Length: 98
Image (tube, rainbow, N blue to C red; front, top):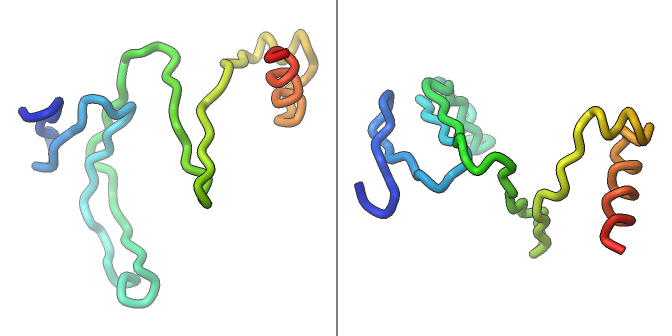
């Protein structure tokens, strides 16, 4: 085990301990690779992190733009505020920042 890596149970590729999820896959179909560079895989094993409880993730939006996962919103909060649409959540989250 080097640098937080360990072996998967189904495939020999290393799992990376710091990842929030690991999917072990096997190649099922490569017919579309020459034309579309498209592979079809089957997930044979999935592992999800159990900690931290509220994982914050970084998302690449393209063109050098990134976003961080934000404040957690529960269904109960949506019911009380009656703002379950994406626009309502965004407006609420930006208002909380001041």
